[in-house]
Length: 123
Length: 106
Image (cartoon, rainbow over all chains, first blue to last red; front, side, top):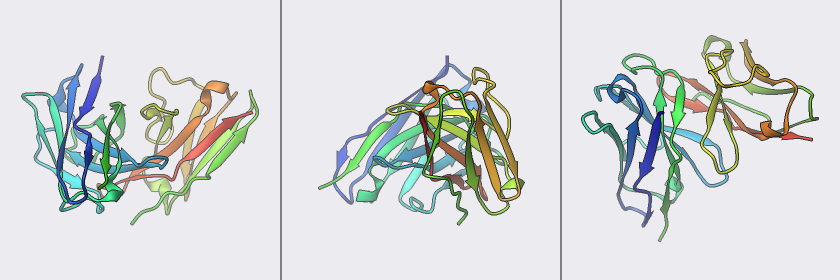
């Protein structure tokens, strides 16, 4: 059974930093691209970032480019999101999602999602 | 940047057909995926690459995509289909979600 379990969400002050983690199990982690998708309270879904199967390619939404860094450790079946210079508008539930493709060329669709971890940016 | 527009809400009588549209410039040239999200839950894939159903998704869910509009159709709507639905595409390796549609089954 595929499982994605996010952690690391807390309340942080504007300008602060945070690292989210996603522990994956039930599939061959290093065969697939992975994503972070977020959802502000009461709002819609927003794609945040993509990392290819080997970590060699990364992509970001304009809203987080230069502030967030996606990474993965295939030896630990884990995905990460380093979030710096946090703003109030980054407040959201952050989902880890698995892609059906390796992500070496074009990403495809999200076939599994975690339950999310809540990040609140507030003073 | 690429935008996807969905109706804010769609109502459907129990057992009838609901159609949710997703509008985007020449969206017919892209692969469209649809996700269902129930309150307090993570999204679930219901249609991928325009018209394909993942295993475990009822045949009542179908999709089409042409021109500037993609459509998710829910036939014989059930109370359990009440949820928010989001379309999604890739635009130059940037993920884009639609604005979301709340489906109410009357």
